[in-house]
Structures are given as structure tokens and as C-alpha cells.
Length: 65
Image (tube, rainbow, N blue to C red; front, top):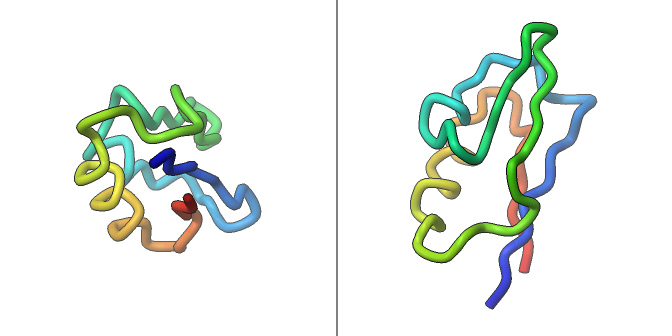
């Protein structure tokens, strides 16, 4: 099963909670813009990504299958 990661850039404020959990998947640049290293959850990383989504204070991250 492929799980997609999406970012609502209108909600993201660049607090980098996701980056602190999975820095290889989420990166916040100097201007507070979030980028993803992958649009789908890599094998074996679902738990980390689910934790990053749950920790987002602005609910800017979503997972869908």
C-alpha cells in the first residue's frame, strides 16, 4: 500500500516539528518553507511519518492512501 504525504502550505508556519522527528523526510528552509524529500512514505517509515503528522501544531500535514 502506498501512502501519500501532503502539505497544506497555507497552514504550515515552519515550526519544524516534523523535521525534528524525521529530518531525512521533512526539511524547513531558512524562510520557514517546508519541503518533502519524498511524496510517498518510504518503506519502514510509516510510524515516523504518522508521528510527524500528529505533532504538527497547525495540522498542515496529511496522509492518504
